[in-house]
Length: 398
Image (cartoon, rainbow, N blue to C red):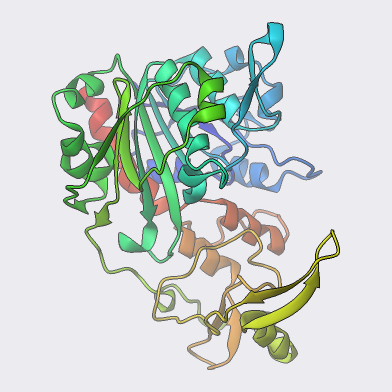
């Protein structure tokens, strides 16, 4: 099967870079889309084009405005997209509609129109538990969409640090494949337990300790609206959906010792990254606190939060890089420099290394603040590289 790829919500190219690192055969990216709403200058898209070229197949427009028939045919659809409100409703003659602006419905429409044989998506790990008032509904809606379009689905929540990388970033990856593929036929010879534990896409790529406690449920629903209104389920961090049922279990990784922050730190860091006179502000943000607040209804309550590590240990992997990494923020990393023994922030290059990008990948003309923002939006390239190698084997079998 031709290794043709469509990359949605491409950012600065994490999926593309990871696949290319896995194999030079992943070079046929037939279409890519990146759009940052409300931004006059599209820094992430410009960075993407800096590395992969500027042409008609790299599109900087709102995906909702694009005729999906104009997207070139592809066999693999990839993308990292946000966790949003996936609820749907009936709309009379219009049938069924999702909440406007929710990107999942754009993905679904592309799958319906283009019929990609394989799909690899990334999202925040809370997707399988959202929303709080109806646990599992959003993921159930996604699974129902895949099911209706003739796909089987595997999923796994992966902490990059548990497989040897330098960030404790937990994300769910979703691998879907058409029930007409040879891969589906091969997987049909195996039990759900075999797929989750040993032979599936994720078990092959990211080995786990054997899980015996697998819950199996029949996936019965009337339509997508029925799922949206009534579905509730406690999904675990691993699972598979196929043939009208899903199996899920809590898996434990075969742990690989990770890199630590000290392994990726720069030397001779510019003074502007040091805390200096702002130390007291950082101590307050990182410390425990109880604050009396007033709600919108006039009710008085106590807001409290515990202390977090200050500074961050450089003998551990980084915490999750967020889009707010450049700001004076409780979640921003503060480390002790090895050479000066002084407290400082991560540099943009260190943030890139933590996400698996080459040094100065985002140094393409964007403001430094936005370089951190792009890394907070990115995925761990090294994880995609590992999955790309497994995909290579699967595609070679088709």
